[in-house]
Amino acid sequence: MSRLQHFGWFLARGFGPHGWGHPYLDWNYRWTEPTLYQDAVRALEQAGFDLLIIEDAPSLGSAETIDLRVRQAFGGPKLDPLLLAPYLFAATRHLGVAPTVNPAAYLPYTAARQFATLQHLSGNRLGLNVVTDTGSARHFGAAPPLGHDAAYDRAEEWLGGIRDLWRSWPDDALIADPARGRYADGTRLEAVRHRGEHFAFDGPLNFVPFTDGEPVIVSPGGSGRGLGFAGHNSDIQLALAPLDESSIRAYRAKIHDAARAAGRRPEDVKVLFAIQPVLVSSPEEADRLVAASAHPDEATLRQIAERQSSDLETDLTALDLDAPLDTAVFGEHVSHGSIRRLVGAHAPDATLREILTAHARLGRLSDGSGFVGTAGELADRIEELGTWGNDGVLLWGDLHPVTVHRMLDELVPILRRRGILRAEYADGGLRANLRSF
Ligand SMILES: Cc1cc2nc3c(=O)[nH]c(=O)nc-3n(C[C@H](O)[C@H](O)[C@H](O)COP(=O)(O)O)c2cc1C
Image (cartoon, rainbow, N blue to C red; front, top):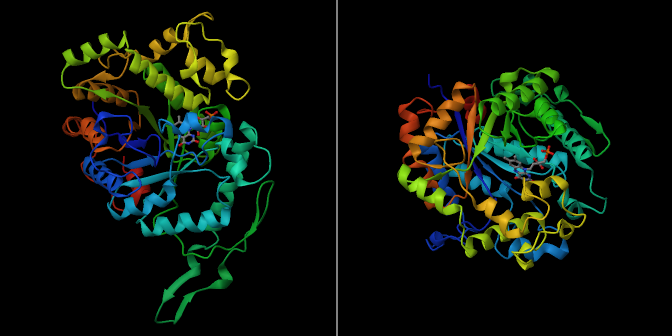
């Protein structure tokens, strides 16, 4: 039987050039102006989505490889998504907005106050996608970057400090009673004196208490430490996993164990699985696209090489496509996991052409081999996820109107008819919507 699920949109490549490199670019939108994003969030709200999450990385990467990241706008430029959020709140009434935030970039007192302000101004619709991107460290001070787990420790201390500040006003501190002529009772405020490993600050926070809960915490890390962070802190976990029953159940079980270990209830963390579908108008068109993808043209291979060059900060476009890929080109700055993801199951003497061709290959939604299909086929997959207890789905893309409408125009009515997508929002903002089923 169908069950309601939560829907999010992940604005991949963040607050940056949208449509760049696509034939649909020339719609006279400017990515540095809010209209493109405001039009999109109105559509997402009309569709019944819970929230938009905006990817971010504050850094353009290392000095030697900046050109790889910017020349096709894969890794930058980007503006700060936290400052886009108010424009999106102003254009909507129910949709949650979760900019990505890096604990290295904001001191806790400033962060607590800015996030609290947005939570109030938005009617309780702020989310925060907390990431531990250590590649940005040099922009925030001269200290060397933290290791993987230490960056999570810092994020935990940061968020704990922010929450202490938010809680520095107990319920009875705010009086606001004209009859008594008293606005607040300052003697009730918690002083908050934080002296931690990474941060030192005093409170209390200069703000007023929340009316419908704290901002929603989102997290994407899938390592053991990342899941531990989510178990302690998150309301939403963004999950990347194969969409078969055992993978979905296993991922959910890990998050639920982490929540229990932190003394929380499993249902306190909603897991949204990321999907990047390619929707077409008929099964025949989907078959054609999948068949063609087995023989990508040079332009397609070049585009994949550009994207990988940006992500891996290594220029693959300068290499001979028909020579075996020597993984020594990656030097020390690329993780083994990232190299494995690029090379996949290929033999060590595989050529770059063979490796990139495998990345070009698409599969069908209908048989679970990939994500090309009709809106009806995508709805079938999402419905199936629901039968395995899934909480929700994160659709992945830019916010160009062509992308948004291609994804949603047919899909939304089908999901609504099947009772999978909400038709109404709860009162009380993002947290209330997450709790409404
Ligand atoms: C769906 C998804 C979204 C992510 N978004 C961001 C992001 O916006 N910025 C960022 O720096 N990292 C992002 N990440 C990367 C994670 O923050 C994290 O660095 C990565 O998953 C490695 O952490 P882990 O070792 O705990 O898995 C994202 C990961 C996933 C799966």
